[in-house]
Image (cartoon, rainbow, N blue to C red; front, side, top):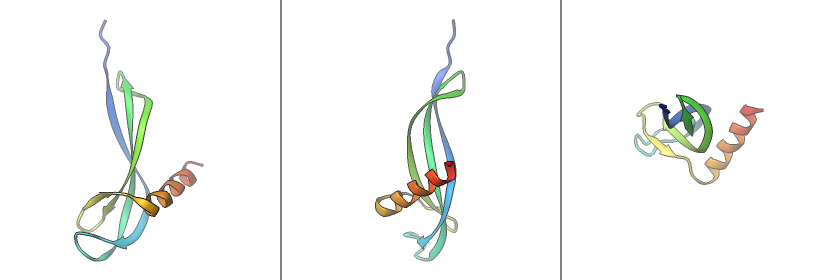
Length: 83
């Protein structure tokens, strides 16, 4: 018998945040992303393994992990979007 198991990462935009970019040094609108890693069985996501939030600059494309109070704000927005 053949079993196809693996992992998949899905990303979803959860908010738009206005903050200064560390690379291009401008105050820009950045996209907040939430990524979730899933265990898959025959390419079907079965078990969620965790999530991480990132912020991506819409001008230069710099992507950084959300930390501190920004991460808490994004977590609240993600819960509000799911409800």
